[in-house]
Image 1 (cartoon, rainbow, N blue to C red):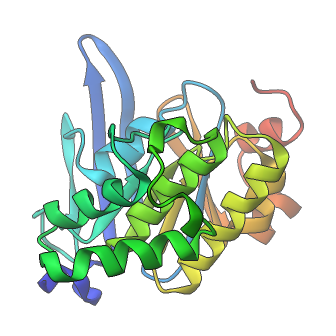
Image 2 (image 1 turned 180 degrees about the vertical axis):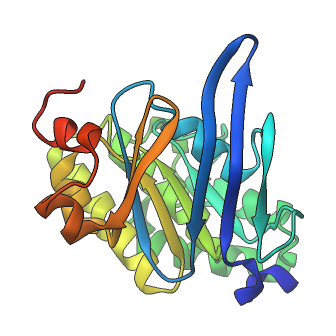
Length: 239
């Protein structure tokens, strides 16, 4: 597919706004994302982080402004998104991944091998025939990541993928996210965990009150945030 090449990037939000009824959730958001990095989106509750990811992924459409991929407005298919709570079908872990590959147009002869390999990459080859919905929360999230990874996306959006997990499961998810990034997939991830952001991020996007107040390399952000809102957040003075 054409969008699997570098033509997907840069991914640009230009003066994007989003409103729900009379409530403005995003206002004049401008953001440029290049290939090959791991971006973590931080900010207090209600800052507009999840809406931003949903707009980028194409689940929502901007009220104002536009989003372009490599200079084009056409929404590419070489992308995936994993949510805080895994969305899994009432079928086996393996069948969940095979179904996603089917929807993506992968030939039937390739699906089982690709799905099996994806489960192995996340350390879950032994759950292939188990019902996905009876797995533990951490295992379900790893299946969701395996399903996304099996699609070989050029970009993966992650909306707080460890928010409901215990520390051990969270560390396993972090390892998988790092491995996905190492395989060449662009990562854009929301988290509330500053330690996790430090471990995973190449750059930080900080949001407050529906706007991006800062987009800077992670080491610079954690050493000296450039905006007052980000500085207050790091000090624990924003929720």
